[in-house]
Length: 490
Image 1 (cartoon, helix red, strand yellow):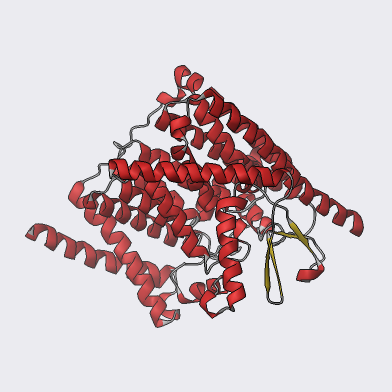
Image 2: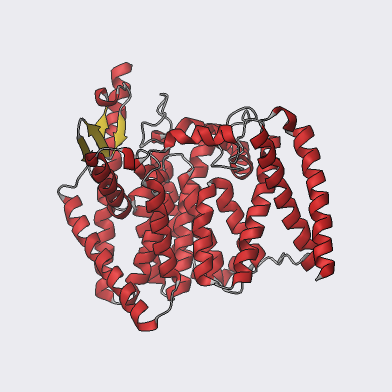
Protein backbone atom coordinates (compact mmCIF):
# COMPACT_ATOMS: atom_id res chain seq x y z
CA UNK A 1 0.00 0.00 0.00
CA UNK A 2 2.82 2.39 0.93
CA UNK A 3 4.52 1.55 -2.35
CA UNK A 4 1.35 2.44 -4.29
CA UNK A 5 0.88 5.73 -2.44
CA UNK A 6 4.52 6.68 -2.98
CA UNK A 7 4.30 5.69 -6.62
CA UNK A 8 1.10 7.69 -7.07
CA UNK A 9 2.68 10.82 -5.59
CA UNK A 10 5.75 10.45 -7.80
CA UNK A 11 3.68 9.86 -10.96
CA UNK A 12 1.32 12.74 -10.15
CA UNK A 13 4.27 15.12 -9.60
CA UNK A 14 5.91 14.00 -12.85
CA UNK A 15 2.63 14.36 -14.76
CA UNK A 16 2.13 17.85 -13.32
CA UNK A 17 5.58 18.87 -14.54
CA UNK A 18 4.93 17.39 -17.98
CA UNK A 19 1.49 19.03 -18.13
CA UNK A 20 2.95 22.38 -17.22
CA UNK A 21 5.55 22.11 -19.95
CA UNK A 22 2.97 21.05 -22.56
CA UNK A 23 0.46 23.77 -21.71
CA UNK A 24 3.11 26.48 -21.29
CA UNK A 25 4.99 25.90 -24.53
CA UNK A 26 2.26 24.49 -26.78
CA UNK A 27 -0.92 26.18 -25.50
CA UNK A 28 0.38 29.63 -24.43
CA UNK A 29 -0.59 28.99 -20.81
CA UNK A 30 0.82 32.28 -19.49
CA UNK A 31 -1.40 34.33 -21.81
CA UNK A 32 -4.64 32.78 -20.58
CA UNK A 33 -6.87 33.90 -17.67
CA UNK A 34 -5.95 32.45 -14.27
CA UNK A 35 -9.04 30.22 -14.12
CA UNK A 36 -8.26 28.73 -17.54
CA UNK A 37 -4.63 28.16 -16.53
CA UNK A 38 -5.75 26.17 -13.50
CA UNK A 39 -8.27 24.15 -15.53
CA UNK A 40 -5.80 23.34 -18.31
CA UNK A 41 -3.20 22.14 -15.84
CA UNK A 42 -5.69 20.27 -13.67
CA UNK A 43 -7.39 18.25 -16.43
CA UNK A 44 -4.21 17.30 -18.25
CA UNK A 45 -2.46 16.35 -15.01
CA UNK A 46 -5.42 14.20 -13.93
CA UNK A 47 -5.61 12.47 -17.32
CA UNK A 48 -1.91 11.66 -17.50
CA UNK A 49 -1.75 10.62 -13.85
CA UNK A 50 -4.63 8.15 -14.29
CA UNK A 51 -3.13 6.66 -17.45
CA UNK A 52 0.41 6.19 -16.12
CA UNK A 53 -0.58 5.18 -12.58
CA UNK A 54 -2.86 2.38 -13.72
CA UNK A 55 -0.42 1.26 -16.37
CA UNK A 56 2.10 0.94 -13.54
CA UNK A 57 -0.37 -0.84 -11.22
CA UNK A 58 -1.96 -3.19 -13.73
CA UNK A 59 0.64 -3.37 -16.43
CA UNK A 60 -0.36 -3.33 -20.08
CA UNK A 61 -3.39 -5.60 -20.21
CA UNK A 62 -5.14 -4.29 -23.25
CA UNK A 63 -7.26 -6.86 -25.04
CA UNK A 64 -5.65 -6.54 -28.45
CA UNK A 65 -6.97 -9.82 -29.83
CA UNK A 66 -9.11 -9.20 -32.87
CA UNK A 67 -12.22 -11.32 -33.16
CA UNK A 68 -12.42 -12.02 -36.89
CA UNK A 69 -15.07 -14.72 -36.60
CA UNK A 70 -17.66 -12.27 -37.89
CA UNK A 71 -15.86 -12.37 -41.26
CA UNK A 72 -16.33 -16.11 -41.66
CA UNK A 73 -18.69 -17.36 -44.36
CA UNK A 74 -21.06 -18.77 -41.75
CA UNK A 75 -21.25 -15.43 -39.94
CA UNK A 76 -21.76 -13.54 -43.21
CA UNK A 77 -24.57 -15.91 -44.20
CA UNK A 78 -26.13 -15.58 -40.75
CA UNK A 79 -26.05 -11.79 -40.92
CA UNK A 80 -26.86 -11.48 -44.63
CA UNK A 81 -30.40 -10.07 -44.05
CA UNK A 82 -28.96 -7.37 -41.76
CA UNK A 83 -26.18 -6.53 -44.22
CA UNK A 84 -28.59 -6.28 -47.15
CA UNK A 85 -31.01 -4.16 -45.12
CA UNK A 86 -28.20 -1.81 -44.05
CA UNK A 87 -26.99 -1.44 -47.66
CA UNK A 88 -30.55 -0.73 -48.80
CA UNK A 89 -30.95 2.05 -46.24
CA UNK A 90 -27.53 3.44 -47.10
CA UNK A 91 -28.59 3.75 -50.75
CA UNK A 92 -31.89 5.42 -49.80
CA UNK A 93 -30.07 7.88 -47.53
CA UNK A 94 -27.53 8.55 -50.28
CA UNK A 95 -30.30 9.16 -52.81
CA UNK A 96 -31.94 11.84 -50.65
CA UNK A 97 -28.63 13.13 -49.30
CA UNK A 98 -27.25 14.04 -52.72
CA UNK A 99 -30.15 16.46 -53.07
CA UNK A 100 -30.79 17.71 -49.55
CA UNK A 101 -27.13 18.47 -48.83
CA UNK A 102 -26.26 19.92 -52.21
CA UNK A 103 -28.81 22.55 -53.19
CA UNK A 104 -26.24 25.18 -54.07
CA UNK A 105 -27.55 27.59 -51.43
CA UNK A 106 -26.16 28.62 -48.04
CA UNK A 107 -27.89 26.08 -45.86
CA UNK A 108 -27.43 26.96 -42.19
CA UNK A 109 -30.15 25.97 -39.71
CA UNK A 110 -32.91 25.75 -42.33
CA UNK A 111 -33.14 21.95 -42.21
CA UNK A 112 -34.30 21.54 -38.60
CA UNK A 113 -31.31 23.62 -37.40
CA UNK A 114 -28.77 21.30 -39.05
CA UNK A 115 -25.45 22.96 -39.90
CA UNK A 116 -25.07 21.14 -43.20
CA UNK A 117 -22.32 23.19 -44.82
CA UNK A 118 -19.99 23.42 -41.83
CA UNK A 119 -20.15 19.71 -41.00
CA UNK A 120 -19.71 18.78 -44.63
CA UNK A 121 -16.47 20.76 -44.56
CA UNK A 122 -15.35 19.25 -41.26
CA UNK A 123 -15.83 15.71 -42.54
CA UNK A 124 -13.92 15.76 -45.81
CA UNK A 125 -12.40 19.14 -46.61
CA UNK A 126 -8.59 19.38 -46.45
CA UNK A 127 -8.66 23.00 -45.22
CA UNK A 128 -9.92 22.61 -41.64
CA UNK A 129 -6.81 23.54 -39.65
CA UNK A 130 -8.25 26.98 -38.90
CA UNK A 131 -11.93 26.04 -39.05
CA UNK A 132 -13.58 26.13 -35.63
CA UNK A 133 -14.64 22.97 -33.85
CA UNK A 134 -16.96 23.66 -30.93
CA UNK A 135 -16.16 22.37 -27.46
CA UNK A 136 -18.99 19.80 -27.20
CA UNK A 137 -17.25 17.84 -29.98
CA UNK A 138 -13.84 17.36 -28.31
CA UNK A 139 -11.87 15.50 -31.00
CA UNK A 140 -14.28 15.02 -33.87
CA UNK A 141 -11.71 15.85 -36.56
CA UNK A 142 -9.72 12.79 -35.46
CA UNK A 143 -12.82 10.66 -36.08
CA UNK A 144 -14.30 12.23 -39.23
CA UNK A 145 -11.33 13.41 -41.26
CA UNK A 146 -9.60 10.02 -41.82
CA UNK A 147 -12.78 8.60 -43.33
CA UNK A 148 -13.78 11.71 -45.27
CA UNK A 149 -10.31 12.26 -46.72
CA UNK A 150 -9.99 8.57 -47.61
CA UNK A 151 -13.29 8.69 -49.51
CA UNK A 152 -11.94 11.71 -51.41
CA UNK A 153 -9.40 9.38 -53.04
CA UNK A 154 -12.28 7.55 -54.73
CA UNK A 155 -14.86 10.30 -55.24
CA UNK A 156 -12.50 13.21 -55.99
CA UNK A 157 -15.29 15.33 -54.50
CA UNK A 158 -15.29 16.34 -50.79
CA UNK A 159 -19.02 17.12 -50.93
CA UNK A 160 -19.89 13.68 -52.23
CA UNK A 161 -17.47 12.09 -49.74
CA UNK A 162 -19.24 13.76 -46.81
CA UNK A 163 -22.68 12.74 -48.09
CA UNK A 164 -21.51 9.18 -48.71
CA UNK A 165 -19.90 8.89 -45.27
CA UNK A 166 -23.07 10.17 -43.60
CA UNK A 167 -25.20 7.64 -45.51
CA UNK A 168 -22.78 4.80 -44.74
CA UNK A 169 -22.95 5.53 -41.01
CA UNK A 170 -26.75 5.69 -41.24
CA UNK A 171 -26.74 2.22 -42.79
CA UNK A 172 -24.26 1.02 -40.15
CA UNK A 173 -26.72 2.07 -37.42
CA UNK A 174 -29.31 -0.23 -39.00
CA UNK A 175 -26.82 -3.10 -39.02
CA UNK A 176 -25.87 -2.53 -35.36
CA UNK A 177 -29.55 -2.66 -34.41
CA UNK A 178 -29.85 -5.93 -36.34
CA UNK A 179 -26.82 -7.39 -34.52
CA UNK A 180 -28.05 -6.34 -31.08
CA UNK A 181 -31.63 -7.58 -31.47
CA UNK A 182 -30.63 -10.85 -33.15
CA UNK A 183 -28.09 -11.60 -30.43
CA UNK A 184 -30.47 -10.60 -27.62
CA UNK A 185 -33.62 -12.39 -28.80
CA UNK A 186 -32.21 -15.02 -31.18
CA UNK A 187 -34.68 -14.23 -33.94
CA UNK A 188 -33.56 -13.01 -37.35
CA UNK A 189 -37.11 -12.04 -38.35
CA UNK A 190 -37.54 -9.91 -35.24
CA UNK A 191 -34.09 -8.35 -35.70
CA UNK A 192 -34.98 -7.49 -39.31
CA UNK A 193 -38.21 -5.76 -38.28
CA UNK A 194 -36.62 -3.73 -35.48
CA UNK A 195 -33.61 -2.74 -37.56
CA UNK A 196 -35.98 -1.59 -40.31
CA UNK A 197 -37.96 0.37 -37.72
CA UNK A 198 -34.80 2.25 -36.69
CA UNK A 199 -33.84 2.93 -40.29
CA UNK A 200 -37.35 4.16 -41.12
CA UNK A 201 -37.73 6.28 -38.02
CA UNK A 202 -38.10 9.97 -38.90
CA UNK A 203 -34.91 10.69 -36.99
CA UNK A 204 -32.67 8.24 -38.87
CA UNK A 205 -34.45 8.63 -42.20
CA UNK A 206 -33.73 12.35 -42.08
CA UNK A 207 -30.31 12.51 -40.42
CA UNK A 208 -29.07 9.49 -42.32
CA UNK A 209 -29.57 11.76 -45.34
CA UNK A 210 -28.84 15.23 -43.96
CA UNK A 211 -25.31 15.89 -42.69
CA UNK A 212 -24.85 16.73 -39.02
CA UNK A 213 -23.13 15.05 -36.07
CA UNK A 214 -26.15 13.22 -34.75
CA UNK A 215 -26.22 10.09 -36.93
CA UNK A 216 -22.60 9.59 -35.87
CA UNK A 217 -23.60 9.94 -32.22
CA UNK A 218 -26.31 7.33 -32.74
CA UNK A 219 -23.72 4.98 -34.26
CA UNK A 220 -21.37 5.42 -31.29
CA UNK A 221 -24.17 4.87 -28.76
CA UNK A 222 -25.38 1.73 -30.52
CA UNK A 223 -21.85 0.40 -30.93
CA UNK A 224 -21.23 0.80 -27.21
CA UNK A 225 -24.34 -1.25 -26.39
CA UNK A 226 -23.30 -3.97 -28.83
CA UNK A 227 -19.91 -4.14 -27.08
CA UNK A 228 -21.52 -4.05 -23.63
CA UNK A 229 -23.97 -6.80 -24.61
CA UNK A 230 -21.19 -9.39 -24.34
CA UNK A 231 -20.55 -9.39 -20.60
CA UNK A 232 -17.02 -10.78 -20.94
CA UNK A 233 -15.81 -7.71 -22.82
CA UNK A 234 -12.74 -6.13 -21.25
CA UNK A 235 -12.89 -2.69 -19.65
CA UNK A 236 -10.54 -1.42 -22.33
CA UNK A 237 -12.84 -2.49 -25.18
CA UNK A 238 -15.74 -0.72 -23.47
CA UNK A 239 -13.58 2.33 -22.75
CA UNK A 240 -12.68 2.49 -26.45
CA UNK A 241 -16.41 2.65 -27.23
CA UNK A 242 -16.85 5.34 -24.60
CA UNK A 243 -13.97 7.37 -26.06
CA UNK A 244 -15.65 7.30 -29.47
CA UNK A 245 -18.91 8.52 -27.93
CA UNK A 246 -17.11 11.27 -25.98
CA UNK A 247 -15.14 12.42 -29.02
CA UNK A 248 -18.24 13.03 -31.12
CA UNK A 249 -20.47 14.61 -28.45
CA UNK A 250 -19.11 14.59 -24.91
CA UNK A 251 -22.44 14.68 -23.05
CA UNK A 252 -23.47 11.36 -24.59
CA UNK A 253 -20.84 9.64 -22.47
CA UNK A 254 -23.37 9.90 -19.63
CA UNK A 255 -25.62 7.52 -21.56
CA UNK A 256 -22.73 5.05 -21.83
CA UNK A 257 -22.10 5.31 -18.10
CA UNK A 258 -25.78 4.80 -17.24
CA UNK A 259 -25.91 1.63 -19.35
CA UNK A 260 -22.64 0.38 -17.89
CA UNK A 261 -23.80 0.91 -14.30
CA UNK A 262 -26.98 -1.11 -14.86
CA UNK A 263 -25.33 -3.99 -16.74
CA UNK A 264 -22.04 -4.18 -14.79
CA UNK A 265 -22.82 -2.67 -11.36
CA UNK A 266 -19.49 -3.55 -9.69
CA UNK A 267 -18.02 -0.32 -8.29
CA UNK A 268 -14.47 -1.27 -9.33
CA UNK A 269 -15.53 -1.83 -12.95
CA UNK A 270 -17.54 1.40 -13.03
CA UNK A 271 -14.58 3.43 -11.74
CA UNK A 272 -12.13 1.77 -14.13
CA UNK A 273 -14.39 2.24 -17.15
CA UNK A 274 -15.24 5.85 -16.35
CA UNK A 275 -11.68 6.74 -15.40
CA UNK A 276 -10.05 5.22 -18.48
CA UNK A 277 -12.67 6.70 -20.82
CA UNK A 278 -12.37 10.22 -19.45
CA UNK A 279 -8.58 10.13 -19.09
CA UNK A 280 -7.96 8.96 -22.66
CA UNK A 281 -10.62 11.33 -23.98
CA UNK A 282 -9.03 14.30 -22.23
CA UNK A 283 -5.59 13.40 -23.58
CA UNK A 284 -7.04 13.19 -27.10
CA UNK A 285 -8.84 16.50 -26.58
CA UNK A 286 -5.54 18.27 -25.90
CA UNK A 287 -3.86 16.52 -28.83
CA UNK A 288 -6.79 17.48 -31.07
CA UNK A 289 -6.53 21.14 -30.07
CA UNK A 290 -2.82 21.00 -30.84
CA UNK A 291 -3.35 19.42 -34.28
CA UNK A 292 -6.32 21.68 -35.11
CA UNK A 293 -5.64 25.08 -33.47
CA UNK A 294 -9.17 26.41 -34.08
CA UNK A 295 -10.66 23.63 -31.95
CA UNK A 296 -12.16 24.69 -28.64
CA UNK A 297 -11.42 23.10 -25.27
CA UNK A 298 -14.84 22.42 -23.75
CA UNK A 299 -13.83 23.22 -20.16
CA UNK A 300 -12.38 26.71 -20.73
CA UNK A 301 -14.34 29.83 -19.84
CA UNK A 302 -14.63 31.39 -23.34
CA UNK A 303 -15.86 28.11 -24.79
CA UNK A 304 -18.43 27.63 -22.02
CA UNK A 305 -19.69 31.16 -22.64
CA UNK A 306 -20.04 30.38 -26.36
CA UNK A 307 -22.34 27.46 -25.57
CA UNK A 308 -24.60 29.57 -23.32
CA UNK A 309 -26.49 30.90 -26.34
CA UNK A 310 -27.96 27.42 -26.85
CA UNK A 311 -29.40 27.33 -23.34
CA UNK A 312 -32.57 28.87 -22.03
CA UNK A 313 -33.80 29.18 -18.47
CA UNK A 314 -37.25 27.71 -18.84
CA UNK A 315 -38.27 28.76 -15.32
CA UNK A 316 -37.93 32.40 -16.35
CA UNK A 317 -40.26 31.93 -19.32
CA UNK A 318 -44.00 32.70 -19.33
CA UNK A 319 -46.38 29.89 -18.48
CA UNK A 320 -47.59 29.39 -22.07
CA UNK A 321 -44.00 28.89 -23.22
CA UNK A 322 -43.14 26.43 -20.43
CA UNK A 323 -46.20 24.28 -21.15
CA UNK A 324 -45.63 24.45 -24.91
CA UNK A 325 -41.94 23.61 -24.61
CA UNK A 326 -42.54 20.59 -22.37
CA UNK A 327 -45.33 19.25 -24.59
CA UNK A 328 -43.17 19.77 -27.65
CA UNK A 329 -40.25 17.93 -26.02
CA UNK A 330 -42.43 14.95 -25.06
CA UNK A 331 -43.99 14.79 -28.52
CA UNK A 332 -40.58 15.03 -30.21
CA UNK A 333 -39.08 12.27 -28.08
CA UNK A 334 -41.99 9.83 -28.24
CA UNK A 335 -43.70 10.63 -31.55
CA UNK A 336 -41.91 12.94 -33.99
CA UNK A 337 -38.64 11.01 -33.72
CA UNK A 338 -40.34 7.91 -35.14
CA UNK A 339 -43.31 9.09 -37.21
CA UNK A 340 -42.78 12.29 -39.19
CA UNK A 341 -45.67 14.74 -38.68
CA UNK A 342 -46.66 17.64 -40.91
CA UNK A 343 -43.78 20.05 -41.32
CA UNK A 344 -43.92 23.84 -40.98
CA UNK A 345 -42.30 25.57 -43.98
CA UNK A 346 -41.33 29.01 -42.69
CA UNK A 347 -39.97 32.05 -44.55
CA UNK A 348 -41.35 35.48 -43.64
CA UNK A 349 -42.23 34.24 -40.12
CA UNK A 350 -38.53 33.79 -39.31
CA UNK A 351 -37.15 36.55 -41.52
CA UNK A 352 -35.61 34.16 -44.04
CA UNK A 353 -35.73 33.93 -47.81
CA UNK A 354 -34.58 30.31 -47.83
CA UNK A 355 -37.40 28.04 -46.53
CA UNK A 356 -36.87 26.83 -42.98
CA UNK A 357 -38.35 23.52 -41.87
CA UNK A 358 -39.49 22.94 -38.30
CA UNK A 359 -41.93 20.99 -36.20
CA UNK A 360 -42.81 24.05 -34.13
CA UNK A 361 -43.27 27.79 -34.45
CA UNK A 362 -43.90 30.57 -31.96
CA UNK A 363 -46.24 33.50 -32.28
CA UNK A 364 -47.16 36.03 -29.60
CA UNK A 365 -48.40 34.08 -26.60
CA UNK A 366 -48.66 30.77 -28.46
CA UNK A 367 -46.31 27.81 -28.85
CA UNK A 368 -47.48 26.05 -32.02
CA UNK A 369 -46.67 22.35 -32.45
CA UNK A 370 -47.22 20.40 -35.60
CA UNK A 371 -49.73 17.57 -35.78
CA UNK A 372 -50.72 14.54 -37.85
CA UNK A 373 -53.38 13.97 -40.44
CA UNK A 374 -54.52 11.11 -42.63
CA UNK A 375 -52.08 8.19 -42.59
CA UNK A 376 -50.01 9.88 -39.88
CA UNK A 377 -52.92 9.73 -37.44
CA UNK A 378 -53.34 5.99 -38.03
CA UNK A 379 -49.63 5.36 -37.53
CA UNK A 380 -49.57 7.40 -34.31
CA UNK A 381 -52.47 5.40 -32.86
CA UNK A 382 -50.63 2.14 -33.61
CA UNK A 383 -47.37 3.56 -32.24
CA UNK A 384 -49.10 4.69 -29.05
CA UNK A 385 -50.41 1.13 -28.61
CA UNK A 386 -46.89 -0.24 -29.13
CA UNK A 387 -45.50 2.16 -26.52
CA UNK A 388 -48.24 1.22 -24.05
CA UNK A 389 -47.69 -2.51 -24.46
CA UNK A 390 -43.91 -2.07 -24.11
CA UNK A 391 -44.37 -0.06 -20.93
CA UNK A 392 -46.69 -2.70 -19.44
CA UNK A 393 -44.27 -5.49 -20.30
CA UNK A 394 -41.41 -3.55 -18.69
CA UNK A 395 -43.37 -3.00 -15.46
CA UNK A 396 -44.51 -6.62 -15.38
CA UNK A 397 -40.95 -7.92 -15.79
CA UNK A 398 -39.68 -5.51 -13.14
CA UNK A 399 -42.31 -6.64 -10.64
CA UNK A 400 -41.83 -10.31 -11.49
CA UNK A 401 -38.01 -10.46 -11.44
CA UNK A 402 -37.19 -7.48 -9.21
CA UNK A 403 -34.05 -7.03 -11.27
CA UNK A 404 -32.83 -4.09 -13.31
CA UNK A 405 -31.72 -4.91 -16.84
CA UNK A 406 -30.78 -3.01 -19.97
CA UNK A 407 -34.40 -1.91 -20.45
CA UNK A 408 -34.10 0.18 -17.30
CA UNK A 409 -30.88 1.79 -18.53
CA UNK A 410 -32.65 2.69 -21.80
CA UNK A 411 -35.32 4.49 -19.78
CA UNK A 412 -32.58 6.31 -17.88
CA UNK A 413 -31.04 7.41 -21.18
CA UNK A 414 -34.42 8.71 -22.35
CA UNK A 415 -34.87 10.60 -19.08
CA UNK A 416 -31.34 12.02 -19.35
CA UNK A 417 -32.12 13.41 -22.80
CA UNK A 418 -35.42 14.80 -21.55
CA UNK A 419 -33.78 16.76 -18.71
CA UNK A 420 -30.97 18.00 -20.97
CA UNK A 421 -33.33 19.35 -23.60
CA UNK A 422 -35.78 21.00 -21.26
CA UNK A 423 -33.29 23.89 -21.30
CA UNK A 424 -31.05 23.15 -24.30
CA UNK A 425 -31.71 23.56 -28.00
CA UNK A 426 -34.38 25.11 -30.17
CA UNK A 427 -35.57 22.68 -32.87
CA UNK A 428 -35.44 19.57 -30.70
CA UNK A 429 -35.82 17.16 -33.61
CA UNK A 430 -32.18 18.00 -34.41
CA UNK A 431 -31.05 16.00 -31.38
CA UNK A 432 -33.40 13.06 -31.91
CA UNK A 433 -30.74 10.46 -32.93
CA UNK A 434 -29.33 10.83 -29.40
CA UNK A 435 -32.39 9.04 -28.02
CA UNK A 436 -34.21 7.29 -30.89
CA UNK A 437 -31.93 4.25 -30.62
CA UNK A 438 -32.91 3.91 -26.93
CA UNK A 439 -36.62 4.26 -27.70
CA UNK A 440 -36.48 1.60 -30.44
CA UNK A 441 -34.50 -0.77 -28.21
CA UNK A 442 -37.01 -0.23 -25.39
CA UNK A 443 -39.72 -1.25 -27.87
CA UNK A 444 -37.63 -4.28 -28.87
CA UNK A 445 -37.58 -5.51 -25.28
CA UNK A 446 -41.25 -4.66 -24.76
CA UNK A 447 -42.49 -6.54 -27.82
CA UNK A 448 -40.12 -9.48 -27.33
CA UNK A 449 -42.91 -11.81 -26.03
CA UNK A 450 -44.49 -11.57 -29.49
CA UNK A 451 -41.24 -11.80 -31.45
CA UNK A 452 -41.96 -15.18 -33.07
CA UNK A 453 -45.70 -14.70 -33.51
CA UNK A 454 -46.47 -14.73 -37.25
CA UNK A 455 -49.49 -12.45 -36.91
CA UNK A 456 -47.39 -9.91 -35.01
CA UNK A 457 -44.63 -10.09 -37.62
CA UNK A 458 -47.10 -9.60 -40.46
CA UNK A 459 -48.74 -6.67 -38.66
CA UNK A 460 -45.36 -5.09 -37.94
CA UNK A 461 -44.38 -5.47 -41.60
CA UNK A 462 -47.54 -3.64 -42.69
CA UNK A 463 -46.82 -0.90 -40.15
CA UNK A 464 -43.29 -0.49 -41.56
CA UNK A 465 -44.55 -0.27 -45.13
CA UNK A 466 -47.03 2.45 -44.17
CA UNK A 467 -44.31 4.20 -42.13
CA UNK A 468 -41.98 4.17 -45.13
CA UNK A 469 -44.66 5.85 -47.24
CA UNK A 470 -45.27 8.47 -44.55
CA UNK A 471 -41.54 9.30 -44.29
CA UNK A 472 -41.24 9.45 -48.07
CA UNK A 473 -44.00 12.05 -48.14
CA UNK A 474 -42.25 14.00 -45.37
CA UNK A 475 -38.99 14.20 -47.34
CA UNK A 476 -40.88 14.95 -50.57
CA UNK A 477 -42.51 18.04 -49.01
CA UNK A 478 -39.09 19.36 -48.03
CA UNK A 479 -37.63 18.65 -51.46
CA UNK A 480 -40.60 20.28 -53.15
CA UNK A 481 -40.26 23.47 -51.10
CA UNK A 482 -36.51 23.68 -51.78
CA UNK A 483 -36.96 23.07 -55.49
CA UNK A 484 -39.61 25.80 -55.64
CA UNK A 485 -37.17 28.18 -53.94
CA UNK A 486 -34.39 27.32 -56.37
CA UNK A 487 -36.70 27.95 -59.33
CA UNK A 488 -37.67 31.33 -57.85
CA UNK A 489 -34.07 32.61 -57.72
CA UNK A 490 -32.89 31.26 -61.07
